[in-house]
Amino acid sequence: MKIYTFLFLTLINITFIYSQSNNVSDKYTQGWNKLKEIDGEAGERVVNGLKDISPELSRFIIEYSFGEVYSLRSLDNKSKEIVAISSLIAQGAIPQLKVHLNGALNTGSSINEVKEVILQMSVYCGFPKCINAMNALKEVLNERKAKGIIDKEGKIASTNKSMDRYTLGAKYLAMLKGDQEQILKDSYQSLSPELVQFTIEYGYGDIFSRNNLDIRYRQIATISALATLGNVQPQLKFHIKAGLNIGLNVEEIKEIMLLITVYAGFPSSINGTNSLKEVINEKEK
Image (cartoon, rainbow, N blue to C red; front, side, top):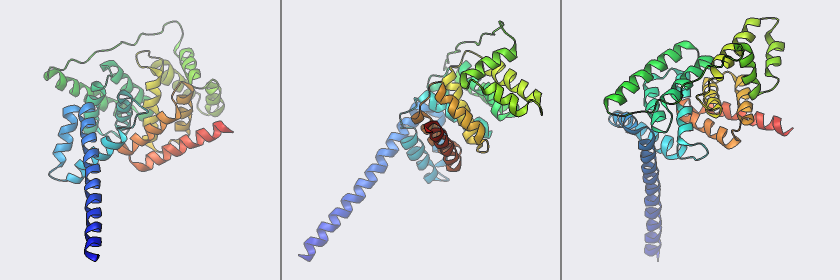
């Protein structure tokens, strides 16, 4: 009887181990397929290049980043790659950015849409990071062209000449929150009127008003960059609210924060999720 019990327990253990290894294998396969779907050859090179020094890192990138996080379904692949490039621009992580610039072009963003995301990051991350990102895009486009890949140029932004930059900016800022211009004035007009003026004229009149990137993608990019920076909670909460106002839903913003675990780490993701939680709680009061 003891022998049969021993054999039975051994069989259970073997079945469990086999099942666990099968799950890992399935996750790896799912992640590898997702990696190829999104980042293509550029992503494969990164993962394969790590196998000799850290096969664990290579495996975790595939299993966690692509097998779990990228396999979530609230955001489409185009939106996910806009999250990725915005986060990487915010960090100045150029080698990784180049991989995901390929990913953005592979998942439906036009060249001009990617340029727009980079231009928008000048507002939140500064011009030096934008310059580096635009140079990285130039390199990626040249590499893709040399391989015979023809990317769609996309719509060129038209210039609104019917109103001055400030009026135009105030109009677009009001799309995100109706009284935000007045809030800016109340907060900064007496101390730094130029800050109010430049925020509205450049941030919204020059950049946000450009009509060749959907407002939804602009908010996804902004939320990603601010969550990545990790030290701008008031601005992040404003843009989470703005995202909800223009049609993003809570599940989509949750997924942005989960993607941030891959690119900026869990602390930034936790802080961003806490900001989302505060916004939801404030709306429910």
